[in-house]
Length: 308
Figure 1 (cartoon, rainbow, N blue to C red):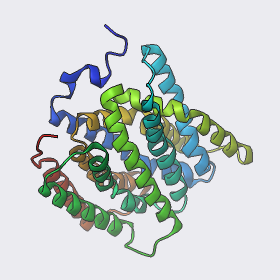
Figure 2 (tube, rainbow, N blue to C red):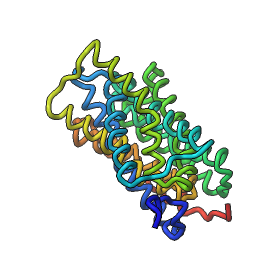
Figure 3 (cartoon, rainbow, N blue to C red):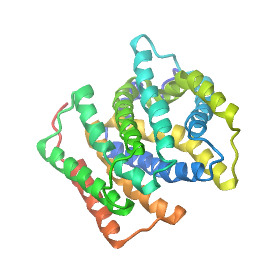
């Protein structure tokens, strides 16, 4: 048996059930749902700079990824695959973590979920453009309603649609970068494997992230108590590494447009965690809005897809 036989392309039966794709996607989204509140915890005391959090977490994840790739003797990406790995790295490893870390120095966790709630729709659009998937009209209707419901729901919890701030622009940029990385990563995972795709992206981005970590530590060495370091450890091990194992496997099984809608529950979960962990206010309208978002996601993922 070849050492890299765990790659998705070489194990077709694992990709045969669309329901399993949704379950893998939901597992990944659950892991990611802690990212916004834990990032807020890590930056709250001011002991860790946003640059340090966004870059150092990727460095730690890259070390884990390199060890996993070496121990299992995975084959190197070939030719144009390296360029595609770079796209994944630019979106999921560099763009999203750095932009959200800077944004959440001033924006509350619940407000960050307002903009991030647009990620499922952005991912679906990129999946159509890049993966040539053709979702049915009911899917787009429910995906659109789900995006609107998610934004309204998160905005009500975050204090309304007050004027845009620079942190909102950073969050919009994070959504776009992440959607591009997700769409490309979902396709590439069918060739390299789910965890292999993210691992190679982390390794490829490691030199840049090491340099940024060094820059962040020269001016202000990181400091913090147990809660800050525990939150940082989660961001490095789960948000930047393990969560992507499940997420990219779900996208690879696909269809990506359908699996991407599972992300609609992420802002709901994030705001619930923010209420439990950070004491941010959770109201009955928020609970009802969250149920509406989950309902839209459920209808969207059950839309009947034709052959791709």
